Image 1: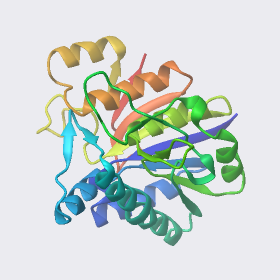
Image 2: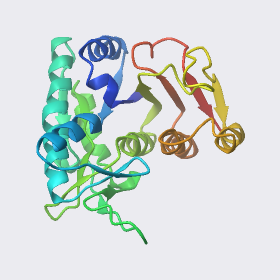
Image 3: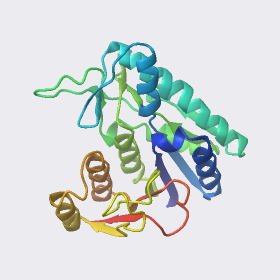
Length: 258
């Protein structure tokens, strides 16, 4: 089996020119086949406010009404995606930007929740990922750059969590590749003390994760991210780590284990 790296890069990295440049430099140096997944929520929120649209969030998840969907589609699939693709092209990486609708890469279903109306938010399973398309692109030396927009097959676009997209793409591809999933953001990894960059937890297993949650060390938006990590490990992905986007090629960061 060939190696495949699936990277998810965080919004704070994308939105800082210097950080994005360093990330791209490191990303291009990774040998072999790779996929990049990104969101762009911070920029989407800023542009929403400029347009007089107040972003609505519940537990870190965006409520996506019709107006918000237009904004996130423009930002994720347009501005942010093409900025990343252009950066990769400048570093001699032949990248291709994709939404879930392009090539039917990811088909999703509108989220149904018993008490919360998330609006045009999509959920999907690994079986909904078009792995034939991914294999074709990779075999032709194209690097997919996937944004956080999917579709439902009836013409409706859906906003979908980028961490979930990365995990499900990794799981879907694990039947064909040895997959390494790497979440990259501005921090050094998962930390015991968010103010102390030297407090990185080098390894977290499923038991330790429950303890860290109970103690409030892992909380908020890190919980769904780490849930995605363990989901991937339990479903065929070879390794999962959370790293600093500027130093993900070394042994730093946090490794997840079952």
